[in-house]
Image (cartoon, rainbow over all chains, first blue to last red; front, top):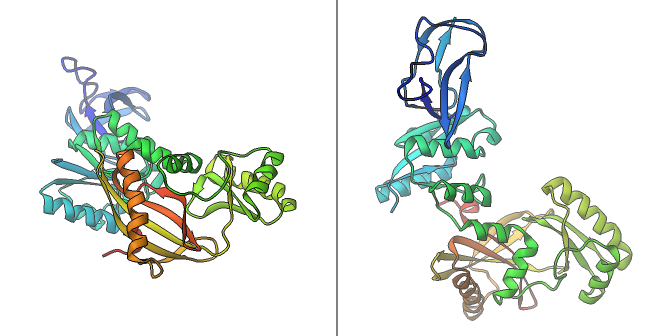
Amino acid sequence: MVGTAYRRPSPEAKLFVDVGSKVEAGEKLLLIEAMKTFNEIVAPRAGTVTAVFVEDGQPVEFGEPLLVIE
Amino acid sequence: MFEKILIANRGEIALRILRAAKELGIATVAVHSTADADAMHVRLADESVCIGPPSARDSYLNIPSIIAACEITGADAVHPGYGFLSENARFAEVLAHHDIGFIGPKAEHIRIMGDKIEAKRTAKRLGIPCVPGSEGGVEDPEEAKRIAAEIGYPVLVKAASGGGGRGMKVARTEADLEQALGMARTEAKAAFGDDAVYLEKYLEKPRHIEVQVLGDGRGNAVHLAERDARSSAGHQKVWEEGGSPVISPETRAEIGGICARAMQELKYLGAGTVEFLYEDGRFYFIEMNTASRSSIRSPR
C-alpha cells in the first residue's frame, strides 16, 4: 500500500520491532498511514526480523519491501 | 498556480501533461502500476510512486492509493488526463475533501452530465435545444406508449447511465415498444448498474456534431467551434472533422453562442464537449462530455 510508514505506535513510544526481534504470527511490525487512517502491518508468520528497510516516517509505495522475517 | 501536480494517468496523455507542466515550471509526480514501472511517463516525471499491481482497477482507478500518493509527495493538485478517473465525480469530490485540486470540471457538473436524464433537464433549462422525448425516466410500458405516441415513432429507448452510443434500443412501432423497453432496461442494468431509461425521438440519419467549450469556473466561457463525427455501426465514432462541412459561419456562431452562454450560466470550469444530432438544419442536444474528447481522437 501507499502511505507513510511508522515504526512506533506513537512518537515517544518504543519501536514495534527492530533487527533481531523475535515475532509471532500476527504481531504488529509497522503502521502505514494513508488518508488519516493507520493500517497495522502484521507478521505473516513467526520468525526473527533480520532486516528493516524503512525509517520512521518514511513514505512508501506499493510493492516496496518493508522488512525481512526469517 | 499549482507547485506540484500528480498525473493520474499514463501513456501519451501523461507525457503531454508532463510537457505542459514542465513549460509552466510545475513539478510533476507520475503514478504507475508495477507493470508500468519502466514506462516513459515514470522516467520523465520529477518523482514517481508505484500505486498498485498491474490491473487498472487496483492502480490507476484506485482512489485511496492515488490520494495517498498525493499525500506522501505533497502534490497540491491532480491532473486526471482522459479516461480512468477523469469523468468520475466521486474522485473529484474526494480530492476536494482532502484539499487537493482536481484539474477538470467541477464535481457537480460531472455528476449532472453523467446522468443523461439530468443532463437533458439541465440543457433545456439553459436554453439548449433538445431531442423531443420523455420528461424523465420511463418505467411503465403504458406510460411509454403514451409518450411515444406524443413524440411520434420511431422512438429510441436510452439508458440514463449510458452515453457514448451505448445502451440504446429502437422501437419503430408501438408493437415493438414494450420489448425494446424491457431489453434496454436489462442491458442497462448489466452494463451500467442502473436500469433507468428514457425515451427520445429517433432521428434516422442525423449528423453528429459536437461543440467544444471552455470555461473558467467563474462565469466566463467560450466555444471553440465544432467537430462533425462519423460513426460505425454500434454508434462508435471512427473519425471527426474539425469544422463541419455542412455548417456555415453564421450557424457555427449561433450554436456556439448558445453553448457558450449555457456554460457561462453554469459557471462551468474546464473543457467540455456538447454533443448534438443535426438533421434538416436543426440541432438537438443529446449529451455533454465533461472532458475535452478531441484529445482522444486527434493526438498532436
